[in-house]
Image 1 (cartoon, rainbow, N blue to C red):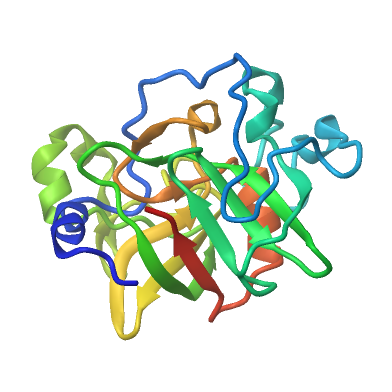
Image 2: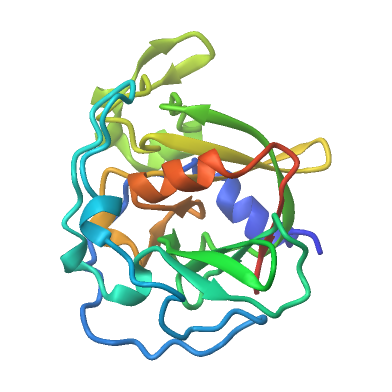
Length: 232
């Protein structure tokens, strides 16, 4: 399944993980349904969220603790049952329910809450992770700079063009995984965020944003070549 031309052209005017948030994540129970074989039931085991979302020590830059209580529990990391058709290792993104599921072995999967593309920047299709980067640089395309002149003050000359150095103030956060279709860069990424409170909302320019602690967890368990399916 390929990204539609219309959606891709809309997204080409965007960049990986732009900070366009302004919404507050929901705090009421959302009653998420089962989708594509992924059970929306409670986690298979109790989860120590204070530890999971605590400060990350020893990383290249500081990753502060995240107050996970600001999000509905549905968007926090959980190990869940999986009975769908995708093979272990596959990443499934459900933009409607704002969830990303990494399929594991033995009928299990790990589920994360995500932020997804707002109206006009949504997309669906199959891709693969071609490369991964820790604390990646961010290169907004000219179209985004024209649309968002307020970001110009953040930009400087980098090795590969005009952008923002990787680090604590970078919109891509602590990790990024780059999505390709064949030899074509889709311009979409799965990445961390400076605004974890926006997880569970549609606020990005098409990319899939995660709490930094979750982005690090997925990054550590994902290899280049991983299949990514974004549901319609």
